[in-house]
Length: 147
Image (cartoon, rainbow, N blue to C red; front, side, top):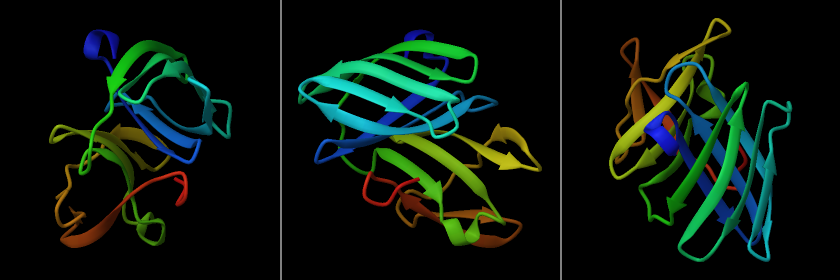
C-alpha cells in the first residue's frame, strides 16, 4: 500500500474474491466480488469499503477504500501461511478480530464494545490466539468460507 499506512489481502477462488484492508488501528473493511478478465471489483456489504483494480497471475493493483480512507496499492501473489484470517465465528464473543498475514507480519483489528483497536498477535502455525487465558481458534478465510 502506498505509504505503508494499511495492509491488504485478496483471496481468489474460481473468479470469486474476498479482500480485507485494515490500518491496524481504526479502519477496516471486508469486501467480496468478482475477478474476471483482468479486472477486479469488490465491495463491502455495508458500503464501507471497495476495491477496484487490475490483475495478472502474479499481482493485483488498484485502489481500495475503507470508511473515509483511500489507498492505492500493488500487491504480489503469495503462498500460505500468508493470507487472510479471522477469529472463528463461534468464538467471536471472546475475540472478534481479522488479520492480513504477509511474510510473517500480522496486521489486524479487533472489535471490542463497538470500537476498533489493534488485534492481538496469533500463532499462525497453531491458528490460535490467547484471550484472557483461553485459546481462541483463528481460521483462514476464502471466498468459499466467507468472512
